[in-house]
Image (cartoon, rainbow, N blue to C red; front, side):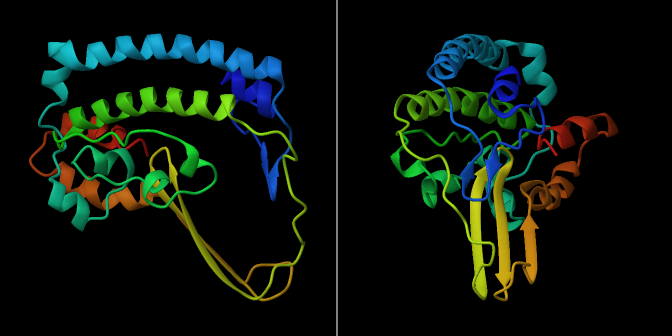
Length: 219
């Protein structure tokens, strides 16, 4: 969050993205600072990974809780870590690359526990992949303009796009009529996609399991 504030001006509402690009570039000092702290985060995450795989109390509490099979995850439209923890090998960054993801090397983390414990393992594994992605992007970032001038009016027609948000596939649909105001805008957030699977996860569990089942999709 300190880095997000340094780059975008705010710890939560960054406002760094703009139509056509981003609002400001990264300095060499900022890049060096980020790379240094990514090393620190990676070491901390290795500890979290050790806890997740060796701490018997944690494993016992999360195992067999909020179960959803591979087939049910597909049928109910689960996305992101929720789906990948049920052995659904799907990630928009790899399957339908956008931005710079076609030039980035990373592994799609999956797990076959099909429960809350599996979702923890997937998220910890994805943290490790994220550090690798950040290093690749910062070390290979090209020089040049940080934004293009976008027209105020967009042509009549429609466009659909999707990307891999932290919680899974995020969809955007826009229909234009040739003016500067869109005729229709529809966003399908990944949390909405995962709610149906939560209903299935609740079956056969205790009331005390409800908070961690919901928390495991990170709504």
